[in-house]
Structures are given as structure tokens and as C-alpha cells.
Image (cartoon, rainbow, N blue to C red):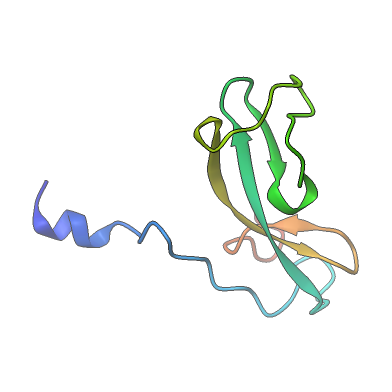
Length: 92
């Protein structure tokens, strides 16, 4: 791969820029949510919603080598709409 191709990749630790408002209701009360996946069974969940040690799908103990980061989304506290940073005007 050329040096140019390497420069075009997004940084691994880069976080998306939070939008100013919800694309569904235009409220400004938004929170950032991190999506994780339990690799053995494929169950995905929000990190902050599962501060637990056991997968709720397969009941296996969650370990750092069995869980992978899958992305960041935003959630509106007003209408509960969940969207990514690129979702605007209903395009999801």
C-alpha cells in the first residue's frame, strides 16, 4: 500500500464529532454511546448499558479479549433516537 493510502485511513482512536442536534426531533440533549460486541456469540450492546461481567445472550464471562469495539453512535435523550454522526435528514 502506498504512503498516501495509509494517510487516508481514519485514526483508530478518533471519535466522531458530536452533532449539534438530533436528526429526528432537533433536540440538543445528546449522549455518546459506544457499541461493543461479544465475539464468541456475536451479541452487541452499549458499553454503558452493560456494566456487568456476563454476556446477557450466552451467559459467558466477559473478558477483554472476547469483546471488541464496534463503533460510536449518538442517542437523543428527548426522543430516544439512536444515530451515527453521518445520519442527517433521515438518511440512516
